[in-house]
Amino acid sequence: MGATRGSLGQSEERALIERAQGGDREAFEELVHRYDRDVLRIALNILHKTEDARDVYQEAFLKIYKNLPRFRFECSFYTWTYRIVTNVCLDHLRRRSSRPEDQAPELASNRNGESMPGDFFDRQQDTGASSDPERRLAGIEIGRRISSALDLLTPRERMVFEMKHYQGLKLRAIGEALGTTEETVKNSLFRATRKLRAQLEGLL
Amino acid sequence: MNDTHPNTPQGAQQNNRGIRCEEFESLAVLYACDELDAGARAKLDAHLAQCPACAATILREERLHRAIASLEQPADSLDRSGLLLAQCRSELAESLDDQRARANRSAWRPIFSPPAWWGALRHTLIYHPAMSMTVLVVAGFLAGVAGQRLRVAPAQAVLTRPVMTVSATPKITDQQLQSAGSAHVAWVTPSGSRTPTVQVQLMSQTPMNIVGAPDNADVERALTFVLENSQRFDPDARLDSLDVLRTRAVDPDVRRSLCAAARMDRNPGVRMKALEALQGFEQDSAVRETLLDALQSDANSGVRVEAINILLNALRSGTGFAAPDPQTLDVLRDRQRNDPNNYVRQQSAAALREMGAE
Image (cartoon, rainbow over all chains, first blue to last red):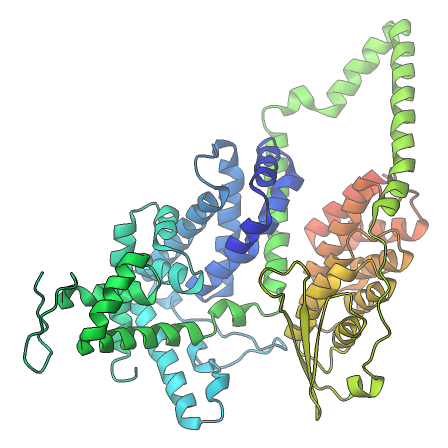
């Protein structure tokens, strides 16, 4: 999201938002197209299921559309969007926690669109280690253990992990997006890291 | 502050750097995540220099960090082709249409419904002949002004488009290109440089590494070769090539390659991106035919959505479709009636309205 935001001048973005607030559908779609790749990416990384990610995409952008007239430029549009998307993701994660049958990760497809078997982390490629079978196996084992550890995280810890490690956001920005303090985010990150470390005991 | 470390051989270690070893676990997380300011980082570095136990903790933390960073993210494998994004956009557009339709049907409808307005206007004009005349004159004037704009706009669009630059004669031979089996394409613009630079690596018995600006003849030739050979190169390489070539769509040869990809690439994500890259060049008859062909025949709804969106934008901006031609009308009418995707049907109807054909 950061790169997209950077390429669009603040005043240009403000004009676009104001047009969208006035009911200009094209302006709204332009805003969507500037942010939606990242929104889908977050949803896929958090939920690991294309169907759920599609639901999050729809729900988040419809909420943005509905609430856009109430956006008052008190924070950046990027932060506001991120807050809505993360809340929708958290709701999905919480709903999923209460339905264990929905927790199985989805089979991904390869480049030709064919389904690939096994857990997502089983398929990790470590090109640097591909010539060394032992290192490759260790890499797969680390991936599997990280996957197990992610299942142990609470929805909030999972969000913080995603935003820190995959999106590369600063803790303060994560706090803003989640509507909480930097200190709370820090504590979530510590707990998540502790769980990961415990799962990777002896491998690192 | 005196600090103790229970893991040192002596059972305790003293230092005066202001860091307690007991606090180090949480600080190590922030250190590895680059969340410490320069002052705190310097203090920690000083502490690490004299505390082997904490140095080991940091190493472990950095290894964990590297392990996480080296994993491919789920999003990379779950939507390699970009097809899911196309589906999401299409569904969202449909949902927004539904919302708008619902809003239009709500309380305002009796006041603003066109039949009601037309009825009222007709009633007024019948009984006020002078007013009817004035309305006709104003309407005629406005239609004249609008028509003038429609005629001028495409010409201006063509004039303001960037002029094609001519590059040097390419140095790569056809034989060299034909021997390539895989490719890697990346932007490698040096920091601080204003000239974008691309690197194309073609793997063969003699690997080729081509570096240059996007308008460099060899770069352009290698990229179009990758894009046009979907049997040989993977979708990622073709999508990366498209990312560069879209900046060169002003070149007719590049457009020809983009049209070929939009029609024939095996991957719908590539076809969709190729269409996207052709946006703004609808006055080129080959581009227009490619768009119509995609709208008419592509099996993927995301690609058809992209095609109709581009056509509709072109119609609304007055570029490329100044006069409705029979082929365009036929395709749009067919899609309006027969496309399995609701959004494509609606947009086709909107395009026909724009052309005054409905």
